[in-house]
Length: 128
Image 1 (cartoon, helix red, strand yellow):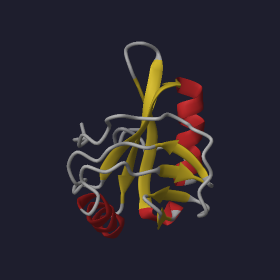
Image 2 (tube, rainbow, N blue to C red):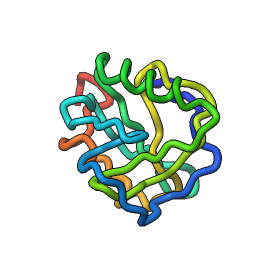
Image 3 (spheres, helix red, strand yellow):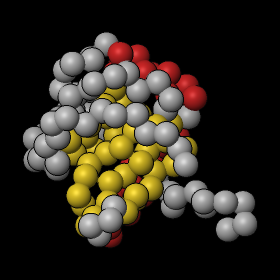
Image 4 (cartoon, rainbow, N blue to C red):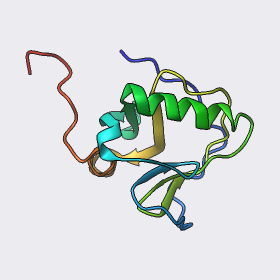
């Protein structure tokens, strides 16, 4: 299981506030689909899901720099100009894995994950 570092407090899920940059952005820093190794819905016990996004090593360094510079601040996470959430950064995200959203219907989370990465999630094992 991958380790997901804490970044969420408080969270505004799927607000309709527009931002200028297209694509996936965190604090205005753009991340192309090529910067994302995997994005997948992570179902919760209550039947909802969050999205786990795993970045390439070079994108993970940029994510670390953005989050390090914004500890204690709210940082908008957006897709195609729509803010998905605005978490307050508690600690820098240095391992290149973050959670997006929360309490989404599983189908919506799966579709959003595919829009973020541009591809289906990677298999959980080499046997798949």
